[in-house]
Image 1 (cartoon, rainbow, N blue to C red):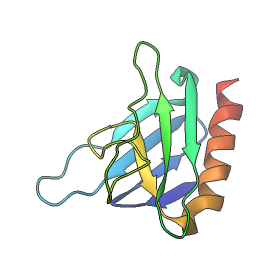
Image 2: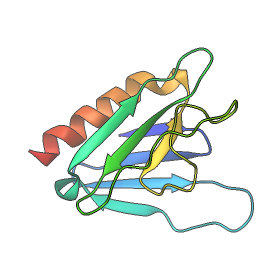
Image 3: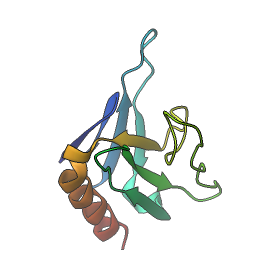
Length: 106
């Protein structure tokens, strides 16, 4: 299952979550997270005016807070490796992915 986000995507194969961001410039390696290691998920659906996000919380780390400002308000910073901004059209896929990760966690 895959969710297309803003400048990247999140895929989940039942055990591993892979977050691939596509920035301008050097291509970073995708971030792989084992679903059993996730201690929490944060999901905020996108609206007509604002992008939403999907974020995974890992043990020993705190979730990156939402940024302020006009362009990036209401979502974690792009530099957070455990989150991805999503457009409104990806809300349904993101809900399914978060539900699948939550089920795999328990």
